[in-house]
Amino acid sequence: MFRLDLRVVVIFAAALSASACRQDMQDQPRYKPLASTSFFDDGRSARPPIEDTVARGQLHLDQARYTGMENGKPIEFFPIQITHADLVRGEERFNIFCSPCHGRLGDGHGMIPTRGFKQLPPSYHDARLRNAADGHFFDVITNGYGAMYSYASRIPVDDRWRIIAYIRALQLSQNAPPELAAQRGTTPGGGE
Image (cartoon, rainbow, N blue to C red; front, side):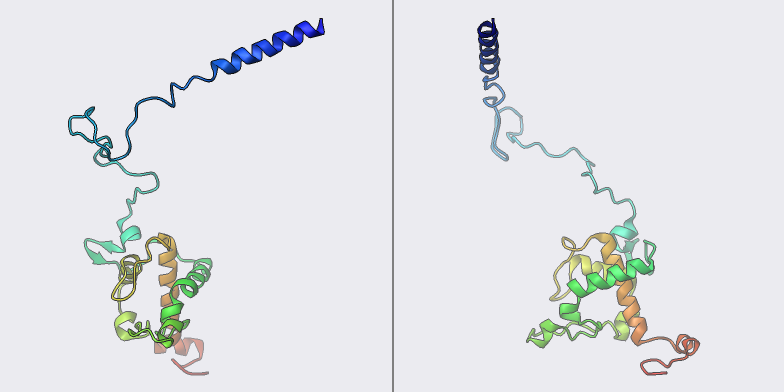
């Protein structure tokens, strides 16, 4: 009795596995990407994306946040809310990505220029950069400027804004307006 049941199970399993060996899906006609074909009138096998198609995660409706610009001009504000935790994250990202050239103080005396890089990065404490719009910094981080290459693929959008917030904190630490220094009981650039 047991031998008969075992034979039935083995035969059933063999029939089931043999039916699963069809290669229809594997042998279906297909084209290599960018290969020519006669199937479509334009002769291309790769179809162009449908107009106005947006990839998942790439719908950037907030122009200020994702470009640092509004109406073609750099913005003068932060499009995300900046908290203490954001400043801490900005400092961490600044030390990783920016300080090798710009220095930990933002003075342009990082490790790379001290080792012989010909073009000295600008100091964030120069009046030109202290007065620059926040959107200017975002544009430079995103697209690069001069010898600096783009960090768009390395630094996420919100982290770029956090770095800019930290740069503003560095600028304020070295160039506090007299009324703020008097309020804190200190003088700009000096001691108590």
